Length: 403
Image (cartoon, rainbow, N blue to C red; front, side, top):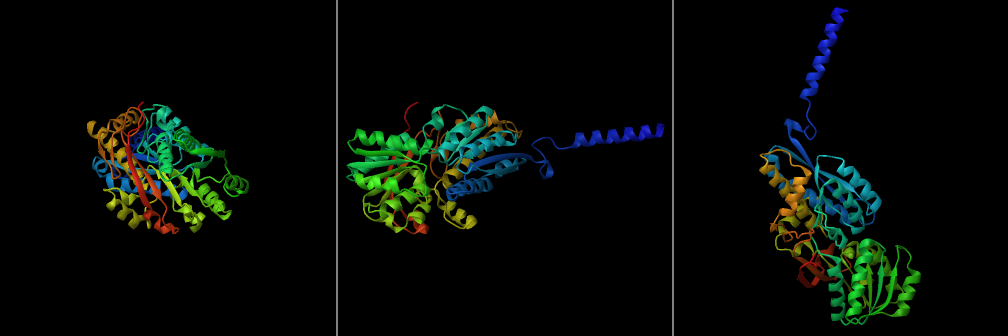
């Protein structure tokens, strides 16, 4: 029995030594590197995945190209991509999973404001910083959360820009449709308010979640005979509505906000969209090739992923770059120690004149960029491969509404 007790004591001692030598949370990489993760959230599956996947890909490319300073300090930087499927419930469920992982110090995303807003409540509650490359609804930043920042403009400006452009094209009447989401309905309402203010007659304002059969709605549109049909929503809905309207004989102009900015719009709607008054969209994200500092990004992106970047991929590259720079700044100030979420949150907001590939970024008190670009773009080809060749007909630099 005495011999057995000695053996057991040795085994217990050995197990304690093994536990003491085990890597702590956040470690575990080869050579004891400290692991930092940056999450992305965007639709990686479903009807909006062509844009959502490239938001992830843009962030991935930035992580691969720009994480060297952190790697040199002994950190291992990993991407943690999540598929929100453009669904608020899934986005929130993912957000709960994201905030439960202490290695995640920053989030890049989302694509849809209706997913971003509830998901970012989770980031805010957990003190996890979020840099959005795409979300435009005013509520994204108007809540005043220190954790929430965006790189693009707002719909309370984008709607105004769109309505004024329409008036300049001679539009005297409009029929407005929206998809009932925070984003689509929001931008449609801002467009409507400005249209009425400047004398454009609003002949209809309809919300629908339909994406396949617009027979009743297109009949109403034809009977109203507006100069313009404006859709506040996404390309997968707009392509079908616009196509069916053309098939029924509508020959006026089509327009939408940046949610319709995807080559899938013409893939769905076909050449008929270019007939009659043509098709235009406002956006807070010009084609990647439009920006003066994106040439290398476009070349590298196409080499790695096999196609030109979709809208917001370049902004996602910048969002990841901002996450990495903020983490790097904190780590340097702590002589290579692991940054905390609170420190990274403060460091993101503290960045000034950050040189991104799509612009130079300084955030105001609510997390909006101090100036944003807005574009009006005309669709020029029914070939999805030529989407990046659409014509930029107007570019505006506008400060956000003061908060």
